[in-house]
Image (cartoon, rainbow, N blue to C red):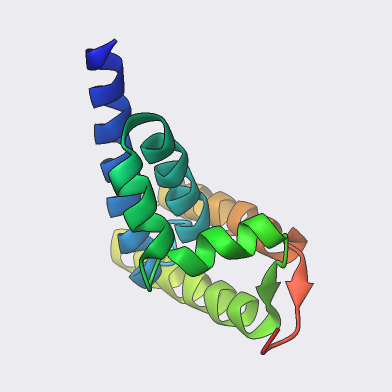
Length: 124
């Protein structure tokens, strides 16, 4: 049982680390990774779950999910723009047909997810 808790705890930190990178790199979805980390910590460590809930950078993701508020239009526009800029730069660097197809599919998938998320007004 202790091994299972330890593995869930480690997975929580990996998820939080990737979520942190996702703040700066639009290819990684920050909110789902932070939420996954919260779930992992809730099962493995009350101390780190409480820390994550109170963290100034990560707690807004958890709170917005709990309240089902969605994301702002400016967030959607910024992230979709950054996503496609990053994808086009990657396509320019890689220059392979398989990369164009794969990166385009990722772009369409992530864009679809972002568009379908509930939109809230700035300042809500």
